[in-house]
Length: 358
Image 1 (cartoon, one colour):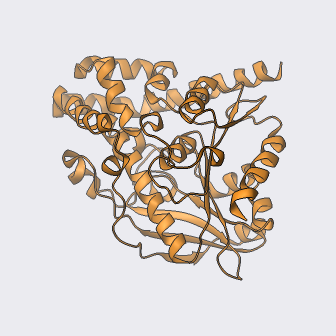
Image 2 (cartoon, helix red, strand yellow; image 1 turned 90 degrees about the vertical axis):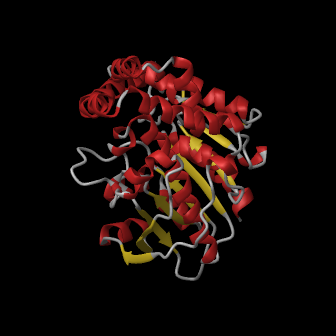
Image 3 (spheres, one colour; image 1 turned 45 degrees about the vertical axis):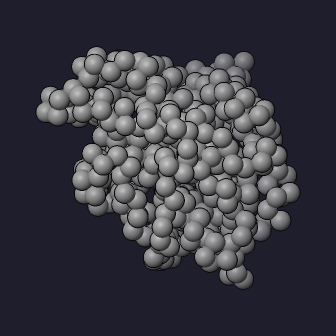
């Protein structure tokens, strides 16, 4: 009963999110098809499909080549009160260059998005093992994520904590964006691919920064789109001690089929652009964690997901679990946003992390 009730809530939320996406992205899609020609989106997809076919994460996601020049300022007093410690908002210029040459001019003009942002909870006695958190789509609030993930408890348990802002979210949203995260899909399928590439690149710069400041153990968790990103990072960078995707999306093509009414828009766009379902799946596999092998040992991978999740349905987690050699998997009797019995998986996360972080 709990699972089914929570699933109903997820379906309502999914329909609302999909409706917002459809309403805001439709003009962009139609304008793109009309003015750039139907071949542009298709050629972009083919570019990413060719990269994906090589299954080489080093080539698909080149590592940053320079240490970020980070600026830091104290966060608002509320953040410090919640953490009961030192909290800074950090920022630096992204060194990301669009992977697809056809997207580079567009990407270089994204002024807000190209400033990487994060909130860093740190202890004053030096670098500590650090738990990094990546939020979900449209969910970039540091305050909300800090409470949802019980980060004050982790902080008081001895961890430093860093909450990373995904591209196009929060203060990285471009001017006139109707909501946080709009830019992820406003640039079409090619823009989505580059947003994911930048999400990975900029987080690797965060790792560079943390290690430069003396942090030698870094764990990563994320929810929904953040879970998708964290699973991908675990296939690209071997400097993580542990990774814990939470309610992760795994196959965007499947999501595009299920999220009504946005799925109608996707089908229209594919039809207008003369893109087949196979071409779509091949292009999207560029940033799919199932396309790459994880770099972390099996005993340092844990997947958490809800039986009633209808935004990232359980089969997504199962596909990742199988790909990850049936690593540790925790089910909870809730949905994407209603995490029933959350305390159970927080305890399991704590035990899982403590073995490798301290």
